Length: 391
Image (cartoon, rainbow, N blue to C red; front, side, top):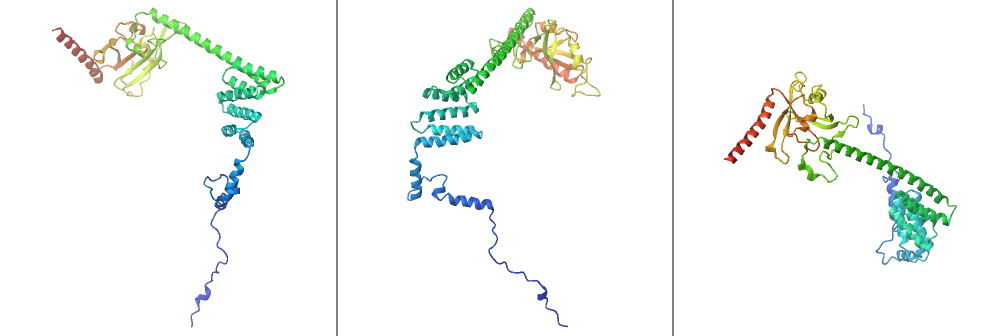
């Protein structure tokens, strides 16, 4: 049996007739069209500098250069106005500035450009430039209410209320029914009232602050045994006291009790941690305060067998003579039931940067023994050095 011709069973694909479909997008075609139009002098957005031999471009340049300066300035003004309406104030300023560069005889156009630029700069909060342009406009044409209105607005923003009032009076003298000037005059009156209220409130706060500071100074003066680190005095201005510091954490006077409330640091050298007490009443003991500070085991202590408890710690402070060095430091132990005021009155206690500090060490601990021994050896070394000097 003869085999069938399988070639007949395969469907033949018809050949594509006509031009191949374009792969160029509509955006690309539009860009290409604009590129081609840019080569045609009539549609150029910018005239080329090198146009020698191109009569069409040279003709367009001639038309541009022959346009009257006043007409050029007016066209730029209109562009600036359009930008201003769209809220593009910086661009509006640029157009008005370019327009002002043209030399022409129209004083009214010059005044209009200056007041328009002042309006744009007013929106940009360039108040100095507003006043400068308005002053120039008034020099060219003293009877210009818009210049006076914008000057008044700028003066209010600069808290120059007397000047704003003068501008309003001048403008209303020219045009008594001018609504803009009448409104800005009211704004100036209200702004002055608000400014005066804020000034009085600020002055009252400063007065109270000064009185509180004076009372604190007197209270510290009464406690004449307090010793502050005078070595830091060079860092302070003549208007600051030794108990004041840049951090703002400083002693305050309780107006009700007359007690001093001190900011205090408790330092834990073993763990390089610390606790800060914002207000430590001088009539409280160290135990009173530590009962609050160590009411719960610190996060860095052993929760099951905490070392830092009120019944298992001792308190120390470092004594270093004013103007002394690190090697002059001594470790001084303080009784847990000692009042803060008593400690600060001790001749060995030096308050540095206005913030008292105390060292907390656990009893019977290896670190504590090493810490105390370090200062003991330091003292022994110093004493031995003094003896050898005498010999």
